[in-house]
Amino acid sequence: MSQTIKQPRLLILDDDPEVGNFMVAIAQGVNFEALATTQAEDFFQALETWQPTHIALDLVMPDIDGIEILRQLGESACSATIIIISGIGSRVLEAAYRSAAKHGLTVTDTLPKPFLPEKLRSLLINSRVALASGFSVTKAHRVPSAQQAVTVVALITAIEKKEIEVWYQPKINCKTGTPAGFEALARWLHPEVGLILPDHFIPFAEQSGLIDMLTDHIFDQALEWFSTYSSQSDIFLSLNISAHSLSDMQLADRIMAICQTHAVATDRIILEMTETSAMTDPTTTLDLLTRLRIKGLNLSIDDFGTGYSSMIRLVQLPFSELKVDKMFVINVAQSTESQNVIRAIIGLGHSLGLRITAEGVEDQAAFQFLQDEGCDLAQGYWFARPMNGAQAAQWQLAWPTATLESSQLAKP
Ligand code: C2E
Ligand code: CA
Ligand code: CA
Image (tube, rainbow, N blue to C red; front, side, top):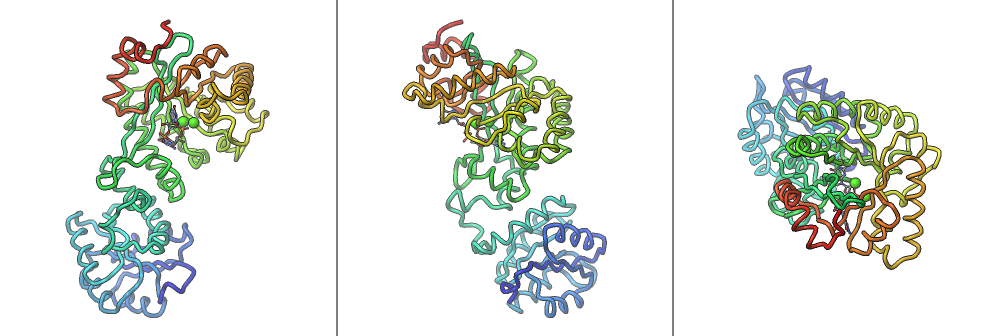
């Protein structure tokens, strides 16, 4: 019945009217119609007359318990997507989840109280996608491919269970051949699917409103790792910032708080963002980037040469580094065109006072070219692939002897 209604509708049953109103506001914020009820009788009446596409159900209420409601919903062959909420612990929530499955109901997730508005918001946004792909409690446990594995529920769980790890890839000083820093790159170590690369889940996190949660998790983990090294050497840490975060004025404060927690000086951090993302909303972006610079963080334009850029804007925005996209670097030894592009970017960047990093260095010829052209830093598989924290620490200890000799770099 409810599948024919275009406008999604959320019906809430929670004996606490404040919680109900709070959820109504969140749902309306993501274009749901929403109605809160506090009594089972009103709830069942609205179910009949209002025909919701989604139901948020509190398990513990004084006049009727949530399990009984689920049973009645099952009997009436309710096809709405259900979110189970409660403050009584995850084991009871899981039991309710299973019980709902037995009644043939579609439960998109369970939501322990207190919950973050962001979590409910994401659930609601994604539940339409989930419904369309046939995700339900009965199907939830056979998740074979990486694409199917990436759902809002799975991503939130992965963040909470620390399945999303940060790996590190070194950046090498072209003049000295020594490590200058590391770039933090997200990796999802999924218990069933295995390794999921960021291209499969970062864009999804951006679309489903989970990117801030993910960014915080990655920053926290990376800075904890980095805090061990930053006091021993002068290396820096680069972190990727999503285009979607560049309109969030709280971003600077959140990053500052994470730096303080781990006692990492902000001038050791470089935030990488694509040129396209940094150029879209000029005023907000300029404000945000300036705030970040004032707080001491360094800013880098990623994937340079592939996106849209305005030279004027580039000069105006407070960047300190420019990263040449790997598509020009990978084949530089064979392509005169790539050589010309890289030469031009290095000249432009240096004339603007920017440090130039080239990523995608896969052979010695590419590194030699970059050294000859005066590029500042190089990054790529020829030096090292991204490694987990322990491996990256080992790698740095072994440098320059083992790695330098094996990759036949010119010694400083
Ligand atoms: P990116 O920022 O351009 O990162 C560089 C990508 O190039 C990484 O892919 C890295 O593994 C790969 N790479 C490095 N050296 C070489 C090389 O020599 N040859 C080749 N072919 N590739 C090389 P990865 O780790 O799969 O990341 C893909 C993209 O996902 C990143 O591109 C970045 O845009 C995004 N990403 C990764 N981690 C995060 C994160 O924590 N937050 C955000 N917002 N985005 C992230
Ligand atoms: Ca990057
Ligand atoms: Ca890049």
